[in-house]
Length: 83
Ligand code: SF4
Ligand code: SF4
Image (cartoon, rainbow, N blue to C red; front, side, top):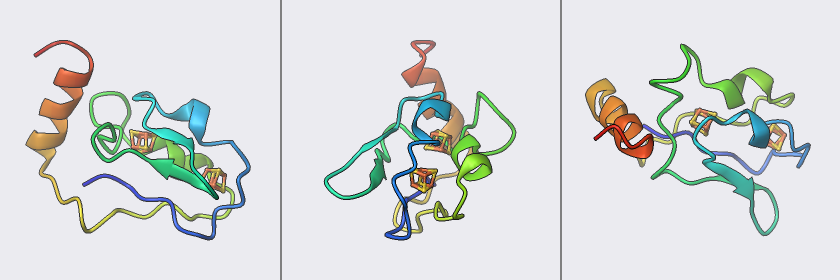
């Protein structure tokens, strides 16, 4: 499951450099996460790094992008050129 940034985002820019998959970018109004690149940080860290640093706690899991742990690990391997 990828994460999603809600409209509570205050555009503080703290999360973007923390993402190991470069999945976060500035959108039209708030920051956005590319679900094809977000692995919940699986493969890189134990916890989603963006959630750890967001000062307003506005990055929940996105129920529209459900994935298993195995799918997230496979995505990580593809993104890092190991598959
Ligand atoms: S959970 Fe990890 S991979 Fe997904 S957007 Fe946040 S920092 Fe990036
Ligand atoms: S850390 Fe939170 S508030 Fe700051 S840009 Fe990212 S999602 Fe928005």
